[in-house]
Amino acid sequence: MSDKQQKKKQKRKKRRASANLASNSWLEMIAMAVRTPVFDHERAIYTNRTLRFGQVSAVGFDFDHTLAIYNCPALDDLAGKLVADRLVEHEGIPREWVDEIPAPGFARKGLILDLDEGVLLKTDRYGHVLRAFRGRHKLTVGQKRKLYGDRDIIPHVTDRDRFIQVDHAFSRPEILLWSAIVDHTEAGERRKQWQRIRHHTDTIHRDGSLKQVITADPAKFIIPDPRTEALLVHLRATGKKVFLLTNSEWEYTSAMMNTVLGRDEEAGEGWLDLFDLVVVEARKPKYFDAKRGKPSKPGPQEKVLLGGNLDEIEGHIGSTGNEVLYVGDHIYADLISSKKNVYWRTMLVVPELEEELTVQSGMPGIVRQLREVDERRTGTEREVMHWKAVEACLLSIEDVIESDFKGLRKLRHECSVARKQATDTLKDFIRQRETLRSRLSTATNTHWGSLFRAGSELTHYGRQLEDYACTYTSRATNLLFYPPSHYFRSPMDYLPHELESM
Ligand SMILES: [Mg+2]
Image (spheres, rainbow, N blue to C red):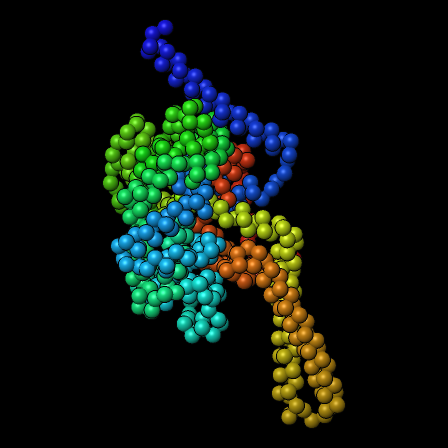
């Protein structure tokens, strides 16, 4: 056998090994679903807007934090240290300021930064401030009121970007560093410090210093998931086109993909076969700008494009608009811009969901109890208002009534007793609700509570998720547990008056 034939044979062998690995993983998944038919929350995909998966002919994936699941503590630690070193070396920040940063749970996506005041905020869907920390110190109700009163904080809209939303997983180290530095700086300095942190964070991403450390030891930073390969194989086997659309560069994506897929490096090489198209250096969210129109450059391999535009990608995959489902983790770059400009259907990957659902399942019935107490509180509030209104009416006729004073006094007494009873019951419901909410919130995150909920309202992040994510889930590979023609049905939406008769 000639050298050429031998090479071909080896290549075929590797491909077969790779295909076997994928089908074996897929087989294991099916076996697990047959033998342990548990519909657990970790695998669930939740639906905001009805989606007929059967009508979707192309599925696209983002790379970082979507297909590539990072070991976040290791990654955050590395990024934080690289940026801290630059702040000390180039900006003259004392080393002791950045040596002791808050605990990792303090930083999370969905928070709003007040750059002028050095405050981190959690708001409800209308922008009303519910929790706030300056540096590491929680603001009291009085301090919050003094700073923000009853105003609604809408990031990126008011006060020349005084308020910005942190919505990227890569932003956690920035928040921790900023909070540590804020504790040592005066008002007027804090915006500048944030800009310095941002500048050096961008630098470590752009100049390759972060990626150089990651690619040197990918197993330390990536949590491999063999289901990824099974999913990609399965989607294509059911007739859907599969594409990758990422801002990362080709060298990095290519180097990390085998670790992401959980492949044996020896069996690797041919991961491009899993995709119909790969677009790197996409520059999202600009990529979704309908007017951008810049053509792509050819990549190092036939299926790979560098940058490009929407018309091109839709032309290549042969699907447009709502025939495309795009799966990503960044609410703005992946979802809002794609939804606004091209009407692609969307799936948001929110790893924090798994953690919150695990907390809830460890406190069985607490969400139901909370909802019941809240409903009963609303009913009792209405009862108190009713008795107050009747009392006011009785008072208003006291001076004009000419007879039956005794009957009037009796009615007023009955009314007062009923109002007092209802008020006491209301106070009891409020206490119960606060206790349940506090238990749930503290168990989720001691500083910030739930990512999605703020009291009885959604958070700003929760509202964006509801508005822009057709579906959402904790991992992209959860798609594997749904048939290719699945009907993702949104829950019935009710107005308050419709809930009355339930
Ligand atoms: Mg991403």
